[in-house]
Length: 236
Image 1 (cartoon, rainbow, N blue to C red):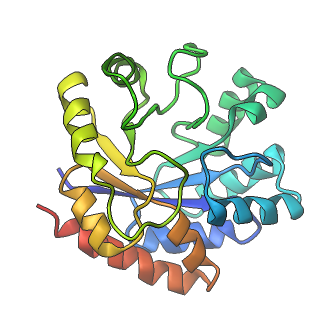
Image 2: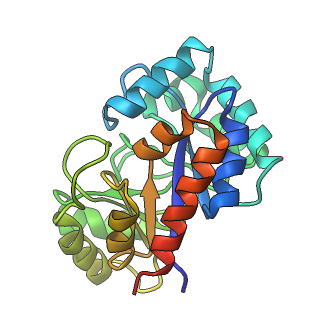
């Protein structure tokens, strides 16, 4: 099974063109951030991107329109990354329906505990601090794949791949159904880190560094994603 590459982008006026560039570079899935004023899981790069998006007027309806425009440009799966307060304000069922209509294949709610709103099908996240019970429940209820948060803390580039990933992946493989893919994210920014993560997990998620590169335009993003693609494809 080939390793998957997931690229996170923040909703915005230029995002459809950036998403198309990421797909051309070899991204298998695009996570689309819905900006929120208090993003607890996000580090400074994604926080600044969210602030810019909000200043552009990217509220939930505009983000859904952005999602639909991206769907018209790319064939890869699209996953909204949305905080629970936005869901509460918009309405869970309404959001799920509208996101699906706009082209989403799943949703991801980083601050919603695994045992909260079990009726809301979503991609679940687990971290090095998660108990075995939480990992098992997340694996049983996740939508398509399980998100391995590689470190304790917020998103953002790190000098080295988190040493906690290997242990978390081992626990997740022991506790999850054998066919469930595990994707690793948080703190992965270089091709070398992406390759190392892909040797442990089934997929790699890159966010903060992708947003930084995207500031230089679609072509730079395409080249960066292509470098990640090459590194991941070389993983054992």
